[in-house]
Image (cartoon, rainbow, N blue to C red; front, side, top):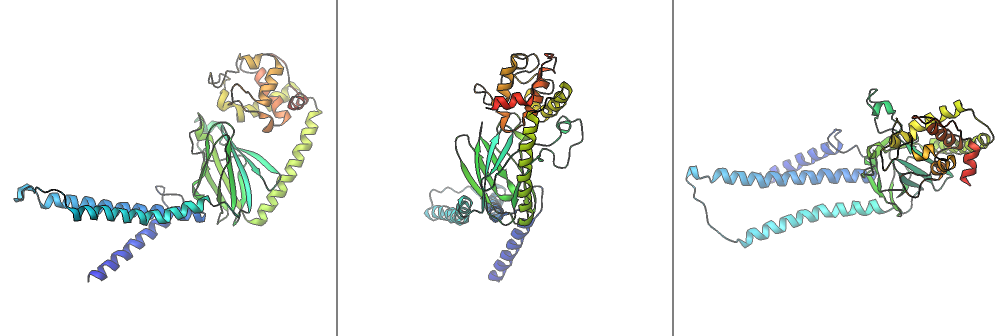
Length: 377
């Protein structure tokens, strides 16, 4: 009878555990999409159940003892000291429970760190507040930036389905391939994290660390920088698009063609002279996407980290200094990155012209793409 009861309880426990593993709940972990994520999910469920059982047993015994031996029914307080048997039991049993939990956990951690025999490698570099992806096996590199409209962030428009979890250029990978991710950072510590993959790897300036994943199912998977990296930490999402291998190869061809086209466009821009209206329109577009988070929509900035552009020394000073700091960044203030690797000559020329003729600044001067091309050298 006792054996049958134990078997029944074990079956119910396993069914409950399986139900939790596959449960789709807003209060649980995201559905796992890689082998590591599945192992983490299973460990999480098993250890949580062990903790629940321990809680029920310990507090159940405690409350039963308090109720069963209460003074009102005639019990008197017992006076006793050490009991060797009890002490051995409450030492050995927790030790065995910890060993039971540590064995699969250690196995999973070792598997997480095994980046050998990868099919492709991507370097992810963290910036405030975006990611740069370099495909080391392909001639492909791009920046991935938050694409949620500013109107939604400022509560001037309804929030979208993927509010603060959408980017202009997602990381694209093939399904069924082991992808090695090298992480580092350009300014402060970031963390590349995609919960559905069971991946969370810090990106530290001056260090290169690695992790890996192999996606099971095509789809779009979302994460965020999970390290407090500054004022707009919450505006640094990660989006991974997993494609079947054939579609991934098509994407690689498209990216190569796009790079060739961008090179040709840059050459054409360098030889063209733009009007004030064209430069201002281009500059406003770039400013609203890349500069507004730090320097604010009104150009007042957030001094001293982000200086004001309205009447500021840079925006109203010598134009050569303005071109240099936007193009090549600032050594005195590392937060001001070099935009020459992220924007085209026309975009940089446009945003500098816009900053010198907006926010009450009325210098009337312009910067042409050829000036930026010269500043890059």
